[in-house]
Image (cartoon, rainbow, N blue to C red; front, side, top):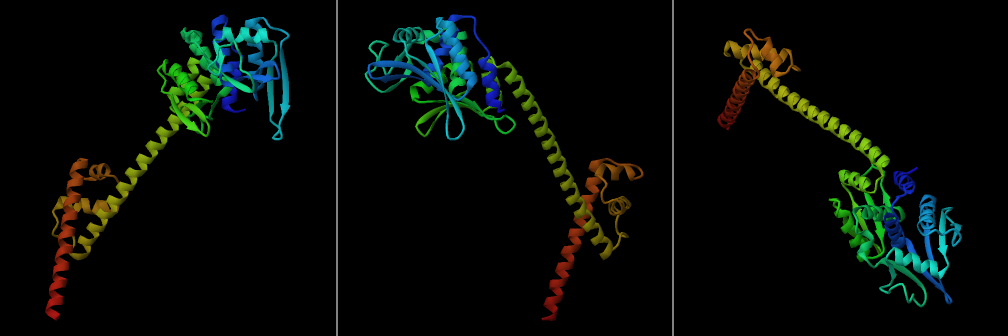
Length: 334
């Protein structure tokens, strides 16, 4: 089961005890997925979903909120892709009018009466009274996610979105989400508008708003594990970089010391430089601190580094002298 489906299953099992919150959640479900369908002289209120939990919740909200038992018919359709969709239809005109009035929904910039003449018409929220209370905003956002939302598996990416049909609906939903200090954005995708959240912490806040507390905890667990892995990876990469840096420096130091030894020997070096030179060649993998501890008397890391830099300067000077002599010899030969 996908993470998105887990979230919807959890939200579908929640029912507010307050009628105004139930109406707000229904308003969102009908606004984003509901349609008024005209057939001849008759009108139907229709909503369709591929999620049985969402279909069950819509059916239960309608039945409990409006005390309707017999007016909702459910059709199950199996597509060629073997996906099952559930269509819930209300045919009683009086019941439809009552639902639309209670949820503050209208058709195509028209009030509930008169209804559209023909075709299939979307519904839209006609009054902000339906989400006046903070609890009703939570319910509306929950209903919107249930019918039109989805969420990526947080183990792969942080992304939550709600797809709506118009810019007005997208802006209305974003406004409600941002009222909870969540940074929601809008992007157009094909003919639809997508309200989306990409930050992991912001998605956690969203799940808290819609009261998906189990999903919230599961997401937090994923975030903690990912952060631990990232932290360990950063530490390992840092240590690997330091090791590479140390190895590169040690290799250069040994090359310089061997160059001095092979060309002039250690005889002209001071006692301190000779000691550190021999130790560096004998212990190529030792750190500066470890080399310093081997000396008598011991010296610190900065002291070792200072001596090795002196050796490097001596080696560079010898190389320059050799190059000058080589040029002089070439000149004399000509």
